[in-house]
Length: 115
Image 1 (cartoon, rainbow, N blue to C red):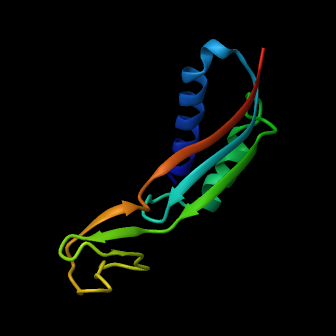
Image 2: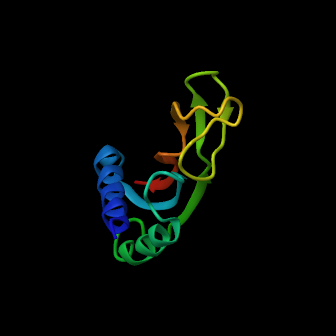
């Protein structure tokens, strides 16, 4: 269950990156989670709920946006959205591809109250 480590790392990053702002409390966080990120959204939410207690994140809303896998074929340049492995181009059936979206975990929104 590496999701708890991801949440703690996010807390540390936010607190260190915004330490000059003297955060009183964080009110909302939004993450984009790609299907290929190896992070389980439900476990992330549960970890956030447990780990935010007694911190500036207590009371914050935590939203997750699931991002579909987007792939570009390296043979014909088509963009497609595979559901499962192997990634086979829907146009030319090549297996040569580049992942464009779907493997990320991105902090896309952060709302907070500062002193």
